[in-house]
Length: 365
Image (cartoon, rainbow, N blue to C red):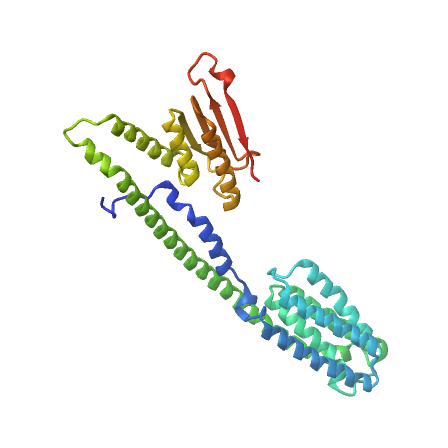
């Protein structure tokens, strides 16, 4: 047979969904994967940054700032860093953004209240740097508008602080305005890198899907070749014998009927014909004169090997129990309460056939 002109059987595409699931797993990703935000190195950098903020807090407390409000802000920033690096959803979930918008400015304002004005050094307003870092990475994680709102609220809290305890709101604006520069750069970076990340992972997904389709196609061709070799080995000797000028003997006619039944089973019930014990039990039943019909509704295709073998072994036992008449064994379609059924009719074709038929039901273990 010409390989270039042959067509694959319908079952040839069955491996593709499983391969595609693996493709989804390996090709999926977002900006976190592209920038390495989900790596140990990212957590190490975040930890070192928190250490530097802790040093700023210690120095600011030594210069007159309150410890507890500053410690609360530090803990909030640490939790924010864990969320930015660890939350897989992209963009960030609304609940995370809402928590940052509510807790951030309030915590900053409470920590500023105990700080003397004017500040004696930049370490006394370390909260600006901490919340700016959170805001910049919120931009990268797809929440640019919320990041700008967060920083505006933080600067607004500083303006309220200086309005009440210092030289007016402009003093707080002057202290915090410089932090809009890094946030602006982070916004530009996010608007550049996020579409690029989406394109990169879309291209990677298409490449993996093409590879998966190719693997599935090669597997289908290999399975087709295997079936053709098995069919050739089983059928060719008998076909050559039929072409002989001598008539077939009774034993050869019986062998032809058995071979025809095996081929029919392979087409109508591949999962049954492919199970050694069930196929042998069907052959023994036919040898006893039992009419055997096997139908595969593909309800066992997704079952585990142990569950599938358990059901098929039970059906083989049912085949061995029949001594005359007929038996119809059927694997039910997916989604049914039962896995398979067997209808045994000891008086097939007789007047009381329907009343004497027995139905056996097989469920998953």
